[in-house]
Image (cartoon, rainbow, N blue to C red; front, side):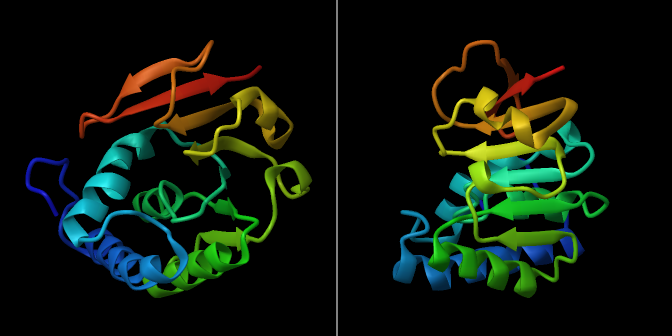
Amino acid sequence: MSSDQAPVSEGPARQKIDRYLDCLLRWAPKINLTAAATRDSAFDTLVAPVLGAEKLLHGHVIDVGSGNGSPALILAVLRPDLRFTLLEPRAKRWAFLREAAREMGLGNTTALRERSDVYHGDLAATITMRAVGLEPARLRALLEPGGCVLVFGGPDLEGAEALALPGRARVQRQCFT
């Protein structure tokens, strides 16, 4: 892990994130999960930009287009008190998410092989997404009243609040009443 990024304390959370990185680097060459080729670059790209966002979560969390597991698996480690549903329609990436969550020992995640527009499970208080390209308003049907969508990366969104995270990353939050 790069020393200039927000630290993940030693202990169970650090061990689970290390297991995530191990799994990611094993699977990535087979199914194109990330361009990051080293542990440090994977940490810098997928873990560090998420650190601090765990404080923005409440209730049931749905991650849309979970793909490589960031931000959902990282947030699930940092918020074991919350329940996470990961939506990923592509079979190989869905299989990766299930395996990574198993290796990490996460009991608070469920990976579903489906798109957000066909999901009919429990509503979320928080939706997260990274590099998906959906407008947050399109996900409103998945939210409880007063729920928020957190968008990691991507262009500025109209009506979204930009928040700085400790690792110099930025997340955009849009809440709906």
